[in-house]
Image 1 (cartoon, rainbow, N blue to C red):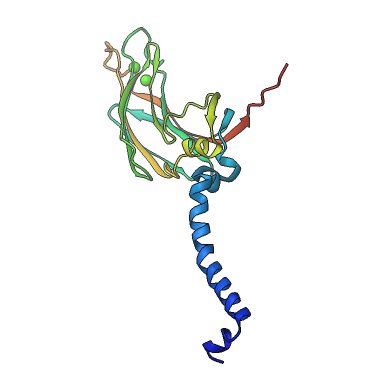
Image 2: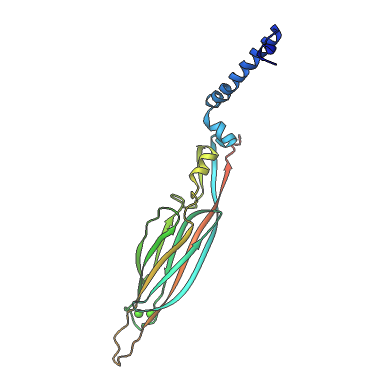
Length: 225
Ligand SMILES: [Ca+2]
Ligand SMILES: [Ca+2]
């Protein structure tokens, strides 16, 4: 069978022409239609329709607590291995201490610390901080936002699509890995006439917390009175 067999009658010629027409026209049709309909509707389906939403967050904390007793000038390395399928809002390191070893006022112990975020996915900045163990302070807290501007507070989103909101509230799979920090104890002891040391240590509590969340989007339905 050669090409002439396909075109030896007028009917066959029409059929061949029709087939050729559709072969040409279908790719053009599918290439052009999405731009006619609009990108949002095609890529997001129903997610692309703008509406008003009540946005809220169901939070689940992941925590690690460690207690350590340190003498003056002692340092301690602490690590927090973080793996989760959930979105991470933020990671916090809280160092708590409360010096009650001295008989009178003053001579309050303190602590300082430096983070090590080099083993964490993403571009996080290391932090240094310090705090006293009493006098209205109890150590210090460091915090890193993994989802930009995360507060966990409910709000109403006006005229936004579901996909826009889900894109905004995501951690980009960052923040996983090993968060680290080193703390150093500073012990202050009142002078003792007998030469003995009144205060030679302090208990420090190290609390790592990752706040993970699930995004909850509820369409705002206007009910006519
Ligand atoms: Ca002290
Ligand atoms: Ca102490």
